[in-house]
Length: 200
Image (tube, rainbow, N blue to C red):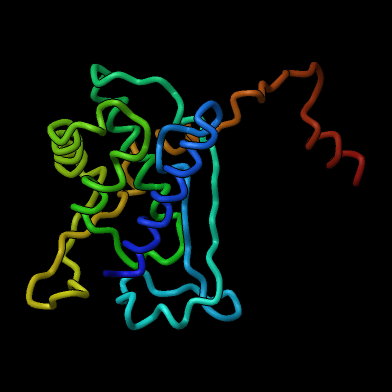
């Protein structure tokens, strides 16, 4: 078993226990619970290492329990193709932003991570295959071969966001935008013009 798998199993146990005791406030999705094994002085433990080899190096366990809006947003499998692609892009962006992921295996992301994002479509193997294929064929997601830590003779297919793709940039820009901020136009010249004039 790898460190990453152990972290996922611990997260799953914590999630199930929390839901059994606090069903009214616990989110349904297991993606709301993340667990990270930490070594001495806060150093990260390599997620691809075998548990038997590195468990002695674990000094603490970091547990984060967060409720993200996208986990609890009601969705249906009949969502548009664009909406499903946007879900996938945001999910992959989320994984890529996490420390310790040297590469992201396509199979792990598609079959383990996507079912946890809270979208109805992502619980279906057929939909996951379809959306992943659409993302790679459109070049929104790029693939490459990466050495398999378990067996070097059989490399795995790794994926990463094509952050130069216009559609990916649009999705991430929309995700980062603050919906509560509405710019207000003020009469008169630009503030920068006023400041430059006063400095002369």
